Image 1 (cartoon, rainbow, N blue to C red):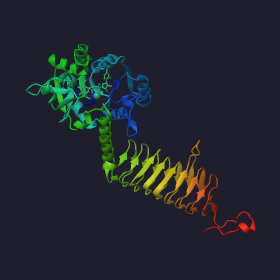
Image 2 (cartoon, rainbow, N blue to C red; image 1 turned 90 degrees about the vertical axis):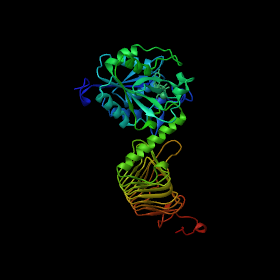
Image 3 (spheres, rainbow, N blue to C red; image 1 turned 135 degrees about the vertical axis):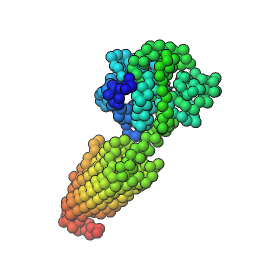
Image 4 (cartoon, helix red, strand yellow; image 1 turned 30 degrees about the vertical axis):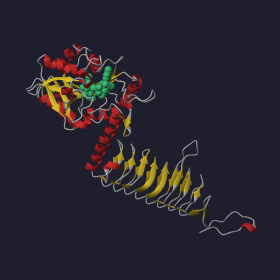
Length: 447
Ligand code: UD1
Ligand code: CA
């Protein structure tokens, strides 16, 4: 048996480096720390948390520094298993790694290190890294990627026989075109044996272009000491580039968006054009639903079987569409419940509303939910028919089977009784006795 034992029996610690300032992304003082910048409804570090949690670590240390109080508060709420480790000042990735290992002094086993700015990391590549590390019983294993344009990323130098030599930062190779020409880059994701890692990080020095301690040099020390360093080439190199500036954030967004869409499609959801459809994280869509192009669905929304959304629809605020509901073009649904088979097909705003089974909401209907201070609810009963251009001033209810005429303005509290039809501005029930008026004023109500 290998010294690493078999499978998952060996303990695993996870170290996430997230203390850096993110200078290239932090535009102003009030920009959140880089790892908390949102992408598809959740912060970058949440995407990473989901990818790395699948490894099932027994210990997790997250190194924070820049705006640490904000990141630590987030960790406390969303990643309670993680121990925050303060790095102040930030003297480089190697320094961050030293502090993380000092926070788990008695740990023995495998240590997977990831940089906090790689949210789009593919879980399968991460699993591949750890599997190969264990199969090869390596002391250090580096996940690498191959790309035509590694740009600012660290380059992997191999000996002629393919063995690992060292990692050279682009900044340290400014006058070495032959190094910059190397297409294999360091992802910043590694697996180490804790026993070999500890002496290797103790030996780090800052004699480089950035005057920092580099985690990459730990790998070199391990190799130079005659220990075994393995290189694993990732299957999804684009997912390893990291987010350092706004353009890379947009790349990560595109990748994560396509991955979320692919996941829904694999479970039986039709997404006609994933390139023009945005579905954020944590949206539940049942098999058999259809999402048409140019649709934006925010985090927390739920869509039932056979429902249809779009084209050009926006769902937000935890909107729920029951089975067979239809939301069409230029319809915004916010914090609303749309019952089975209910429809709102054109140019409509449904906010803080509930729409009953089979109700039909006509073109250009507005729930006026906000009075300038507070939000109020609109209830549209089952099988109700809301005429085109109706404004429902909340709080208001339309009873079961109630109807509003075109352009009716149903004012707050003037509920439409079940089965009744209301018309006009302000809306009144058709056929109801009108208030007595001066004789000269008498005129029939419009039909
Ligand atoms: C690093 C690697 C580079 C690799 C690239 C992959 C080093 C020296 N270089 O470069 O080889 O190709 O990542 O994305 O490791 N951090 C801290 N404390 C610090 C400095 C950084 O926690 O003192 C964190 C940052 O928050 C970030 C991560 O470490 O999440 C990487 O730091 P960054 O400055 O982005 O390194 P790169 O220049 O991208
Ligand atoms: Ca980086």
